[in-house]
Image (cartoon, rainbow, N blue to C red; front, side):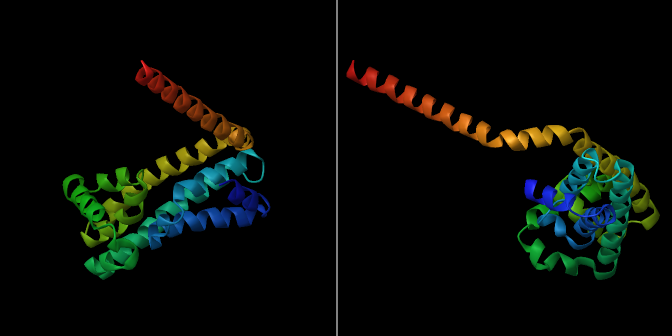
Length: 201
């Protein structure tokens, strides 16, 4: 993530907004979330806002609007193509989870659209599944917008609040990993020594 943040930080503000918005939009409209979850883009936008590269409120607005539009496109794709889209390559290996998502829509209706926004896989497929199930678009849009606002502002704010901490953790990551490895080695050696001592007895 550090490399992506550095790359985005080198771009101008409007380009950063465009990239973050495109990633969030494509996750819901084109299932790109399997590669880079939209929440990662939202958090990165918040981190960059903390660093002063972009405005928090603008990036949050971009994330929310992109989420609503992306979901709407995903809904229309599902509504138009129906069950045929469930056979596309990115979804073939996730039939069990698709079944769970469809069951969620049957049991919870439009509320599944809201709650699905907070789970990466469901966020990517729920709009299309709502379209396939012929959920009324106005009902879908209401719960979609509520979820997008809550999720978009929340994850962007998370990135903003963690901005400075993120930089510190990134710098100390090597030391932390080394410390954990050292601790594991010490514990392993201690366990081996105790077992050997018991066998000798």
